[in-house]
Image 1 (cartoon, rainbow over the protein chains, first blue to last red):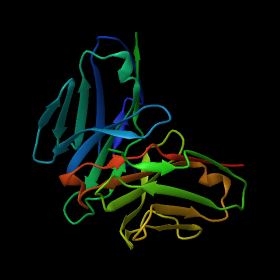
Image 2: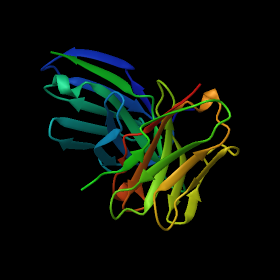
Image 3: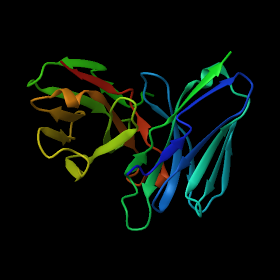
Length: 114
Length: 116
Protein backbone atom coordinates (compact mmCIF):
# COMPACT_ATOMS: atom_id res chain seq x y z
CA UNK A 1 0.00 0.00 0.00
CA UNK A 2 1.12 3.61 -0.46
CA UNK A 3 3.52 4.82 2.19
CA UNK A 4 2.85 8.48 1.51
CA UNK A 5 -0.57 9.65 0.44
CA UNK A 6 -1.30 13.28 -0.24
CA UNK A 7 -4.59 14.97 0.37
CA UNK A 8 -6.32 16.58 -1.43
CA UNK A 9 -5.59 15.11 -4.85
CA UNK A 10 -6.25 18.49 -6.44
CA UNK A 11 -6.49 22.01 -5.05
CA UNK A 12 -7.46 25.20 -6.88
CA UNK A 13 -7.01 28.60 -5.24
CA UNK A 14 -6.65 32.26 -6.12
CA UNK A 15 -3.36 34.08 -6.15
CA UNK A 16 -2.54 35.45 -2.73
CA UNK A 17 -4.39 32.74 -0.83
CA UNK A 18 -2.68 30.09 1.26
CA UNK A 19 -2.52 26.48 0.13
CA UNK A 20 -2.38 23.55 2.55
CA UNK A 21 -1.56 20.03 1.48
CA UNK A 22 -1.46 17.00 3.73
CA UNK A 23 0.46 13.77 3.64
CA UNK A 24 -0.12 10.59 5.61
CA UNK A 25 2.20 7.63 5.88
CA UNK A 26 2.04 4.20 7.44
CA UNK A 27 5.41 3.11 8.82
CA UNK A 28 8.05 4.80 10.94
CA UNK A 29 10.35 7.19 9.14
CA UNK A 30 13.69 8.93 9.50
CA UNK A 31 12.80 11.95 7.40
CA UNK A 32 9.96 13.33 5.35
CA UNK A 33 10.54 15.52 2.32
CA UNK A 34 8.38 17.59 0.04
CA UNK A 35 9.06 17.94 -3.67
CA UNK A 36 7.51 20.03 -6.42
CA UNK A 37 7.06 18.89 -10.00
CA UNK A 38 6.05 21.24 -12.76
CA UNK A 39 4.20 19.59 -15.63
CA UNK A 40 6.56 17.53 -17.75
CA UNK A 41 9.59 18.37 -15.63
CA UNK A 42 11.71 16.76 -12.95
CA UNK A 43 11.26 16.99 -9.22
CA UNK A 44 12.60 19.90 -7.23
CA UNK A 45 13.40 19.42 -3.58
CA UNK A 46 11.57 21.88 -1.34
CA UNK A 47 12.19 20.96 2.26
CA UNK A 48 13.24 18.08 4.50
CA UNK A 49 11.96 17.58 8.02
CA UNK A 50 13.49 15.03 10.35
CA UNK A 51 11.46 12.71 12.53
CA UNK A 52 12.50 14.57 15.68
CA UNK A 53 11.36 17.93 14.31
CA UNK A 54 7.81 19.26 14.52
CA UNK A 55 7.90 22.30 12.28
CA UNK A 56 10.18 23.83 9.70
CA UNK A 57 10.08 26.99 7.62
CA UNK A 58 11.66 27.95 4.33
CA UNK A 59 10.59 31.21 2.75
CA UNK A 60 6.85 30.96 2.06
CA UNK A 61 6.83 27.27 2.98
CA UNK A 62 5.90 25.85 6.34
CA UNK A 63 6.02 22.13 7.01
CA UNK A 64 4.72 20.36 10.08
CA UNK A 65 5.24 16.78 11.11
CA UNK A 66 3.19 14.78 13.60
CA UNK A 67 4.81 11.40 14.04
CA UNK A 68 2.09 10.23 16.46
CA UNK A 69 -0.49 10.68 13.69
CA UNK A 70 1.98 9.78 10.94
CA UNK A 71 1.10 12.90 9.02
CA UNK A 72 2.66 16.03 7.62
CA UNK A 73 1.34 19.22 6.12
CA UNK A 74 2.82 21.67 3.66
CA UNK A 75 1.58 25.24 3.79
CA UNK A 76 2.39 27.68 1.00
CA UNK A 77 1.56 31.22 2.01
CA UNK A 78 0.67 34.08 -0.34
CA UNK A 79 0.54 31.75 -3.32
CA UNK A 80 1.56 32.84 -6.80
CA UNK A 81 0.62 31.56 -10.23
CA UNK A 82 4.17 30.18 -10.50
CA UNK A 83 3.40 27.85 -7.57
CA UNK A 84 1.11 25.86 -9.88
CA UNK A 85 2.58 22.35 -9.85
CA UNK A 86 2.20 18.90 -8.34
CA UNK A 87 3.51 18.50 -4.82
CA UNK A 88 4.74 15.18 -3.48
CA UNK A 89 5.71 14.04 -0.05
CA UNK A 90 8.40 11.39 0.19
CA UNK A 91 9.43 9.31 3.16
CA UNK A 92 12.39 7.11 3.88
CA UNK A 93 12.16 3.98 5.96
CA UNK A 94 12.76 4.21 9.68
CA UNK A 95 14.78 1.96 11.93
CA UNK A 96 16.12 -1.06 10.10
CA UNK A 97 14.93 0.22 6.77
CA UNK A 98 16.73 1.56 3.74
CA UNK A 99 16.95 5.28 4.34
CA UNK A 100 18.24 5.99 0.85
CA UNK A 101 15.04 4.70 -0.72
CA UNK A 102 12.26 7.26 -0.94
CA UNK A 103 8.60 6.32 -1.12
CA UNK A 104 6.46 8.92 -2.87
CA UNK A 105 2.75 9.57 -2.70
CA UNK A 106 0.60 10.28 -5.73
CA UNK A 107 0.81 14.00 -5.20
CA UNK A 108 -1.45 17.01 -4.91
CA UNK A 109 -2.03 19.05 -8.06
CA UNK A 110 -2.11 22.69 -7.02
CA UNK A 111 -3.52 25.27 -9.41
CA UNK A 112 -3.10 28.92 -8.49
CA UNK A 113 -5.35 31.15 -10.56
CA UNK A 114 -4.14 34.69 -11.31
CA UNK B 1 27.24 23.89 -12.47
CA UNK B 2 25.19 21.34 -14.37
CA UNK B 3 22.58 19.35 -12.53
CA UNK B 4 21.62 15.77 -13.20
CA UNK B 5 21.55 15.27 -16.96
CA UNK B 6 19.30 12.72 -18.56
CA UNK B 7 18.96 11.79 -22.20
CA UNK B 8 17.06 11.30 -24.25
CA UNK B 9 14.23 13.44 -22.88
CA UNK B 10 11.73 11.64 -25.07
CA UNK B 11 12.03 8.20 -26.58
CA UNK B 12 9.55 6.30 -28.74
CA UNK B 13 9.94 2.58 -29.22
CA UNK B 14 7.87 -0.15 -30.79
CA UNK B 15 7.01 -3.25 -28.81
CA UNK B 16 9.95 -5.65 -28.71
CA UNK B 17 12.64 -3.00 -29.21
CA UNK B 18 15.22 -1.94 -26.66
CA UNK B 19 15.31 1.32 -24.76
CA UNK B 20 18.48 2.81 -23.28
CA UNK B 21 18.23 5.73 -20.91
CA UNK B 22 21.31 7.63 -19.76
CA UNK B 23 22.00 9.62 -16.66
CA UNK B 24 25.00 11.73 -15.69
CA UNK B 25 24.91 12.62 -11.99
CA UNK B 26 25.80 15.97 -10.55
CA UNK B 27 29.49 16.65 -10.37
CA UNK B 28 31.01 14.95 -7.37
CA UNK B 29 28.01 12.68 -6.75
CA UNK B 30 28.71 8.96 -6.82
CA UNK B 31 25.26 7.72 -5.76
CA UNK B 32 22.66 7.29 -8.48
CA UNK B 33 19.03 6.26 -8.20
CA UNK B 34 16.47 5.43 -10.85
CA UNK B 35 12.77 5.98 -10.30
CA UNK B 36 9.78 5.34 -12.54
CA UNK B 37 6.66 7.46 -12.70
CA UNK B 38 3.55 6.04 -14.31
CA UNK B 39 0.85 8.48 -15.46
CA UNK B 40 -1.01 10.11 -12.54
CA UNK B 41 1.23 8.29 -10.04
CA UNK B 42 4.05 9.14 -7.71
CA UNK B 43 7.59 8.00 -8.29
CA UNK B 44 8.53 4.41 -7.53
CA UNK B 45 12.07 3.41 -6.60
CA UNK B 46 13.76 1.05 -9.02
CA UNK B 47 17.47 0.78 -8.33
CA UNK B 48 20.36 2.37 -6.44
CA UNK B 49 23.88 2.26 -7.82
CA UNK B 50 27.31 3.45 -6.91
CA UNK B 51 30.21 3.41 -9.31
CA UNK B 52 30.49 -0.13 -10.72
CA UNK B 53 28.14 -1.53 -8.07
CA UNK B 54 24.43 -2.20 -7.81
CA UNK B 55 23.52 -1.56 -4.19
CA UNK B 56 19.79 -2.20 -4.25
CA UNK B 57 17.69 -3.31 -7.22
CA UNK B 58 14.68 -4.38 -5.22
CA UNK B 59 12.34 -2.09 -7.18
CA UNK B 60 13.39 -3.23 -10.59
CA UNK B 61 11.44 -5.88 -12.53
CA UNK B 62 13.39 -9.13 -12.59
CA UNK B 63 13.17 -9.54 -16.35
CA UNK B 64 14.06 -7.22 -19.21
CA UNK B 65 15.35 -4.40 -16.98
CA UNK B 66 18.98 -3.81 -16.11
CA UNK B 67 21.04 -0.91 -14.83
CA UNK B 68 24.71 -0.10 -14.66
CA UNK B 69 26.96 2.72 -13.52
CA UNK B 70 30.41 2.12 -15.00
CA UNK B 71 33.63 3.58 -13.71
CA UNK B 72 33.62 6.00 -16.65
CA UNK B 73 30.54 7.43 -18.26
CA UNK B 74 26.88 7.79 -17.37
CA UNK B 75 24.56 5.40 -15.65
CA UNK B 76 22.44 3.40 -18.07
CA UNK B 77 18.97 1.99 -17.54
CA UNK B 78 18.27 -0.61 -20.18
CA UNK B 79 14.88 -2.07 -21.00
CA UNK B 80 14.86 -4.98 -23.41
CA UNK B 81 11.87 -6.10 -25.46
CA UNK B 82 9.73 -3.19 -24.34
CA UNK B 83 6.00 -3.58 -23.83
CA UNK B 84 3.27 -0.94 -23.65
CA UNK B 85 3.27 -1.12 -19.86
CA UNK B 86 6.83 0.21 -19.84
CA UNK B 87 5.56 3.58 -21.05
CA UNK B 88 6.42 5.97 -18.25
CA UNK B 89 8.73 8.76 -17.19
CA UNK B 90 12.03 7.47 -15.87
CA UNK B 91 13.83 9.76 -13.48
CA UNK B 92 17.41 9.61 -12.38
CA UNK B 93 18.57 11.21 -9.16
CA UNK B 94 21.95 11.58 -7.55
CA UNK B 95 23.19 12.40 -4.09
CA UNK B 96 26.46 13.23 -2.46
CA UNK B 97 25.88 10.69 0.30
CA UNK B 98 24.10 7.36 0.24
CA UNK B 99 21.77 8.27 3.10
CA UNK B 100 19.19 10.73 1.91
CA UNK B 101 18.71 12.14 5.36
CA UNK B 102 22.03 13.89 5.11
CA UNK B 103 21.33 15.44 1.76
CA UNK B 104 18.44 15.56 -0.61
CA UNK B 105 18.22 13.79 -3.92
CA UNK B 106 18.78 15.92 -7.01
CA UNK B 107 16.54 14.81 -9.85
CA UNK B 108 17.03 15.07 -13.57
CA UNK B 109 14.30 16.21 -15.94
CA UNK B 110 13.38 12.63 -16.75
CA UNK B 111 13.22 10.49 -19.86
CA UNK B 112 9.74 9.88 -21.17
CA UNK B 113 9.39 6.53 -22.86
CA UNK B 114 6.46 5.82 -25.12
CA UNK B 115 5.97 2.30 -26.40
CA UNK B 116 3.79 1.99 -29.47
